[in-house]
Amino acid sequence: MLYPAKEHVRQTGEKLVGLLPDVDRAKTQIVLLAGEVTPFRNDTDRELSFRQESNFYYLTGCNVPGSYLLAIYQVGTSFEKSPLVKLFIPKAELADIMWSIPPPSLDEASASHDVTNVYNVSTLVDQLTEALTAFPDAILHTFPTNSAVLPNFPAACASQILQAGRTLVDAHLLPAVHLARLIKDDFEIDLIRKANQISSRAHETVMRVLGKAVKGSITSPGPNANRPLLPGEWLIEQEAEAEAIFVASCRREGSIHQAYLPIVAGAQRASTLHYCCNDREFAWGPVKPTDHKNHDHFPQTGDKEFVPQVLLIDAGCEWSCYASDITRTMPVGNGGKFSPEARDIYNLVLDMQKAAMEITKPGVHWDTVHYTCHKVLVQGFQRLGIFKTPDSPSSGSWNSEESILASGDSAAFFPHGLGHSLGMDVHDVPSASKPTVNPTISETEKVGNPSYYTYLRLRLPLQKGMVVTIEPGCYFSPHLLAAIRDSKHINHDVLKRYESVGGVRIEDVVLITEDGFENLTTVRSETEWIEGVCAGDL
Ligand code: GLY
Ligand code: MN
Ligand code: MN
Image 1 (tube, rainbow, N blue to C red):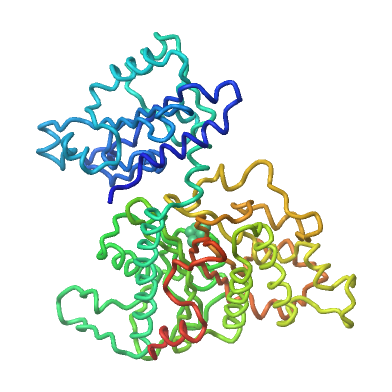
Image 2 (cartoon, rainbow, N blue to C red):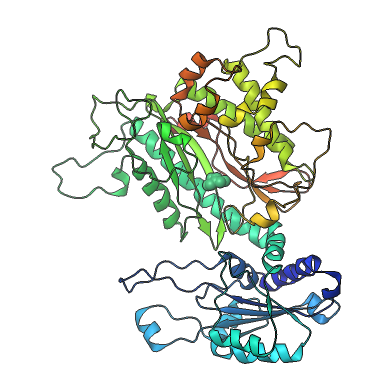
């Protein structure tokens, strides 16, 4: 089955017309877009890996660098049900064939794309002129020139438009494509499912390698073997090794790109939400709480042990331009078991995720789901003694659950949003996810402190067909804790005991269904299972 590009153009046309002033809705809508071109690195004469711009792919299903789209949609005409979709691809040049893989022929591209017709790019200007002449009242849409999604038309195209006395309207098309992309169709869901399955196996692979090492069943050829280590002989003793195994696992299953650069953070580095270095060794022996300078190489020997610590891996691959986004937090050291404090925090984050999942279904506002997680965090912290509890459970007390929620103190521990839309991009369709006017949730619902919503990337009621992440976390970041060091709600001695945990995040990707959700992430996250695998017992 072909990628349903024509249907995506139709849905985009429908959304586009909905965004236009009444007087323009019946007019012909022409869409002119440029796809991504092959990137090169300076002075290497070698292509960087090509990834089509997401919106262009959504409307064309085309992965050929240097392509263009010309589409026509009009309400009340045959183009309303079946828009005209013309795809323009570059012609194969001898030099391209010699150095690289050429673009497909027109016949090959026609057979593999769900579009009306495929042409060579050289005909684009003529066909644009033809469309402008045939539809003198048409509105010509493209993406904003000041956005990251840059139109990159041949100069002749621009002068043709100028000569015809027409303008390119850039205000509506991108929001329209984002609105269409917010709800996923079955074809897209299958691609997201596949990306999640591959990434789930990669997460489990890392855990199983950790578990094998705990059991001492990874054997090394020894320093005198005079050969490099084979993959089955790799230990994971530093973040880079965990990253390498994750990426290798995805790559060997055919995934070309990671959906974002993996976040692989050991110990306290897990408190940096988008940690990007992935270059530290795990902590051996006594370690200072903020030790980021553990550069020495430590051979694995019997007389050295890892300090009990967490390893947070937030990583997901892409499959045919569709993303996954999964976080698992696992124990390192301590025989593959969490320290008591890390287990407390892990269980609490799992409780937050369970509470979120219990209410995840169409119609529920995402603000509510996010706020529920803050409530569970506050209750959990009161149970652990990090937040104080009232002597008598009278609501209104200065340290009641409600007062703590109103203070916003829990934002220092759970500073990010519960989740976001996911699709072709990891933080998918931002303009459709976080409208400037938030569709309000009921006035009577408590929503806690406004600081909870600063980084919430989805501010909508859930709808069937949305794909979102559910990713609660709990972190002990020195920078964020600075703001609550004087908080009267906190028992600072108890907090100190938990700070070395660093951070825990658990992130799954779910599809919103008719009456609930389907979890597309298949790697498990129960505490016993994670510990069992990381200890080499399962
Ligand atoms: N991987 C980035 C995020 O979870 O949002
Ligand atoms: Mn995410
Ligand atoms: Mn993530």
